[in-house]
Length: 263
Image (cartoon, rainbow, N blue to C red):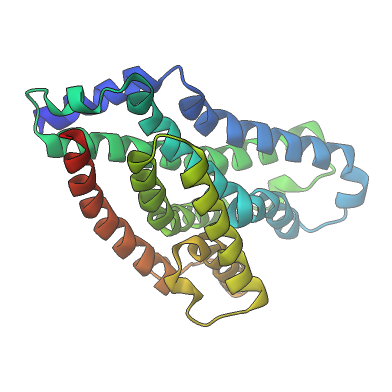
């Protein structure tokens, strides 16, 4: 455990000034700021909306963008940026010769990547609530104060996080295997497009088994559920498969990187 903690601290110190780390913070901040500006400028069209509908539209913009294309692309970049530090300096062999268990080194890097994804989605939920309430203060005609959706919003982003772990594990391992960005980015982008097609155009009943479809399916399923209830079913099929894929790929990735490190 001590080796894992040391490795995790090392990951933070190595990446705290990188674009990968700051993108996890700046992406939700910039997106929610732009959405808030749009709502403020168009308040005359939105002021007649009931509070619940107003919150739904405000939060739904970011959730829709993240659930379709932006989140998978962000995960691709995030996974690559964490591993690119070792590729760029060619320090994989050095890492695995340290007096720290190899499993701890690998796990710390994986857990740190998962943490960055969690941080970004948690910030999306927090900033959505913060900017919404701020808009209600700045422009009282926008009826944000008439409804509270904090619980529902955090449930939505928690489920989106769980449904994204399959993609993250796959992209993480691919970024371990290849030094260049184009291969994991190309495969990830193709997978994202296929996932969108399977869900929206083909409406394939087994789309939940395809990891790049899972975030979109979770968002669509939550949108339907929230219309009839404030509670959400977290452990749906796409989440279960995502977690299973994440576990299998995580274990397989260790043996891949271990073999790679001794060549």
